[in-house]
Length: 253
Image (cartoon, rainbow, N blue to C red; front, top):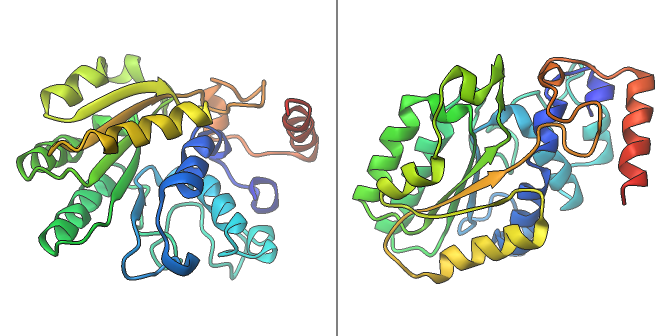
């Protein structure tokens, strides 16, 4: 997709791909595999810049065709470079950071008031945690005891203009979530079995608290020249860098 559309944000898609595939494979409920099913769980990609990772999962589910991916970000395509709610399977239009979290909290409250068993997951970036709307949403989620809401932080240590801790230090994120009344786990965000087990463990607590996972990740994970290199937030693939990246990914399996 990144090569076909000559687009940026490939590295932040690599940092969340395991998070998304574990959610889709092991936890999200979509009756009859329909992305708009009435009683579906909600997945909010608040860090909408990583949408290529979600598109890849949606392709595997049969919701997007190969042609959709090949035409990513080209003239006339439906698939844009940020999450767009006009696409079935994308719940929010995001990329303006901090907003998706609050939308997710609202969906969780709605499901609770209606007595439905739907769960809501919001995937946010650690740089995105700078936004005040996130902290207001955390207060709201705890106040309303939204035990059906889980936020997963893609804590890759980078944001648009540099390292997260240099721009606005927020650690310890786990301690902050706990102080806001969340049940919290901190894990390796690239270990699929650890991710899946952590999600299950939080739900199995059966507490009245909202849930949080701080997933420690690497921006550009899997491609050596992209890893923890924030230039790849804005760098476009060439034929050479594309083939080098694919070679590394294949050889790492």
